[in-house]
Structures are given as C-alpha cells and as structure tokens.
Image 1 (cartoon, one colour):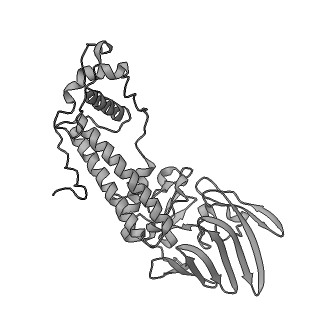
Image 2: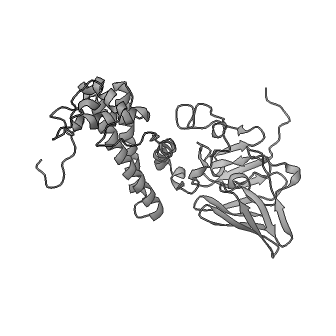
Image 3: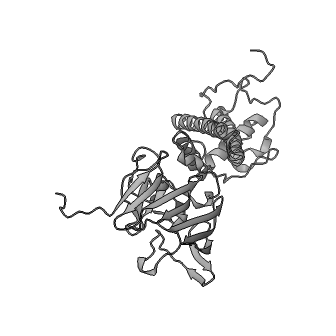
Length: 360
C-alpha cells in the first residue's frame, strides 16, 4: 500500500533525442541542460550559468557566471574522466570517491561533473547515466530501475547491477552496459544511436575478449617433438588432394617422428594449425560448437562493415577505427575458417567469392 505522505521532490523533462533537458526541483529554480555531441556542455539555473570546456573525452575546465561575475576552475581528472582536483585562484580542492563513486554530501562538490565525468543529480545525489536514461545510486551501488536490454540482451542477467560488480575495471556511460576503461578514448557516439548501438556493443564486447594467442607460430622447417607426436595420431584428418589448401610438395619427417611416419609438408602445416588453435582455446573439438563460432565470427565481420559504412563521410576518426576492426575481423575469420576445415574435415566450406575478372 502506497504511503499517503509522498511528496514530489523534482520533475524531469526530456528532449526529442531522449536526453535529460530540464529538471524542476521543488522550491528551487529550474535547471536547463545543453549538450554538445551528446555530452553535457552547459547548465543554467536561474542567474547561474555553468559551462564545461572539454576536448574530445578530456575534461579541461569549468566556468561559472553569476550576475556577471566570472569564476574559472581547472579540472584535474584521471583517465576515466573522474574529477579528482579543482584548481582556481583560491587554491586547490581535492575530491575523493568510493570505488562505486560515492562522495559524501557534507564534503561538498563545487564541480559540475564528478565520478567518471558524470553529472550528479543535485536533488537525489544519484548519477543519471545515459543523459538521463537511468539513475545510478552510488550508495546502494546499483541502478534504481531495470535495464531495458536485460535479461536477454546485452544488459545482462542482473537488470539492476552496475558494471557487473567491477567499477575499477569497467565504466557505464549509457546506463545499458559496461565496457573496459581502457576503451575510454574509442568512439562511443554510436551508443546513443538506436540503430548502431547493438552492433557497436557486440563489437566492443568481442574486442574486449579476443582469442588469446598463447602459442607462438611453430617453425615451418623443423617440426617439434610435440607436433610429430600429434601428427602420428591425427594424420587422417589432414587435407586431401582436393583441398583448397592442399600441398604441392612433400616433407619427410623420417626418423624424427616417433613412429617413423612420413608426412607431407601440408600435413605438418595442418597439424601445426590444429595444435595452435586448440592450445590457444580457439577451436572446439565439437563440430557443432565450432560451426556456431564460425557463424558468430561472420556476424562480427558484418557488424564491423556496417559500422564502417555508418561513419563513412561523417566522422573520419570513427570511420578509420571501424575500418581497422573490419580488417582484423576478416583476417581472423579467414584463419578460423581454414583451421575449422583442418580440424573438422567433414565441414564443407562456402566457396571463396570470385575475384574480379574471373569467370562466373
């Protein structure tokens, strides 16, 4: 049963882009918010005008103007954009937070932005992430409302959880999903576009967990004892004469093989590829799982291509970034396809697309 003495502390208004545009706290002047490239740039409350100066993701300073009096403060931040120190003509003011961003109200906070460069709501003390999408409570260390992408989407199973319980290693600017802090300087404008957000989230997540290359490339001319031992028991899975990667020359292992087996150079090449991928965790023994992984890699290539075209002609830096993503994803897809064919000979690869000028 709802309490009868509830009171409205503040009302919030949003613009056509679903960004928090105004707040109307009870008993105080209304607050208007203005953005530059989806980042808070200016806030006006009555006679107070506060402007934030920043270059890309780097916070530089803030300027407060009250009744014609101008005050400028330099902002010292960390790589996550958290404001750690304020510098003005009166001196310096250090700022500290808990790992989840809590800053005691009694210690005050004259900076407009705070933890992870986000604006703290002056009424509740919560951070309205995603430009007002969801309120994050740094005291409870969780969101006040569920994520629309949970539990089956990229929001994760815990619809109220913040950065998967790891505020040191991850940040959450959109209120939807965490990503590693080391990615802070990579393009994120797509997060605010419903069409591009899903593809971007997928790309950031898979790039955050790339296949670990734990095994160095084995020498092509001198097979190691481990390769010879494995080759003696798995030679039947090598590519046949009709394989697209079949060899045209032979390599005799001779007495170096435990069983004296004579293996072709291509068979050794296939064995090395199979060994490297399996030791690195990149190839499953299950053909079904391996095929599913191939499908995922193909979707990653398609997603990277889509994002590259999305930024073509509009943002050079983002276009170059996703161009490199596409280049890497295509290369890894090609390597994985070959390794899949070697490890699971029954798998039939799709034919390579014809090159320009070839007969169709």
